[in-house]
Length: 164
Image (tube, rainbow, N blue to C red):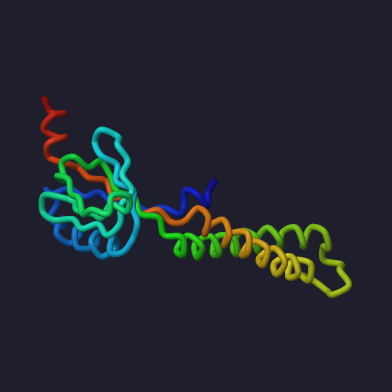
């Protein structure tokens, strides 16, 4: 569960924010050549590639229709990108640390301080075996789940309607 929660990043795109132009530029850099899910305000989900965010619209290539399409920014709820390779790296790191720590603890408990290799040998063996196992399991899990970059659009029109 921790791996699923830890492998995501959320960003808010608000046109009233002083950093909005920088956020749009970062969005366009991340979107270049990647597939994404666009969730519209009416909960419609669109799979698209090659997204480009302008001042007032979002444009993309629809792989099903083979057409370039666009929609007003006010109609977008959020856009999600999934990066498998970053997810795999994060999973490897979490697995290495978690598996190594758990392996060291179990190794120390099983062997204790009176092991034939001396003090701490059980923890060291457990650290290596647990860390290696965690690295493999975490990498595979991370590759399957991926790292999600989620961009939520806070539209002025939505805010005005909620103020009424």
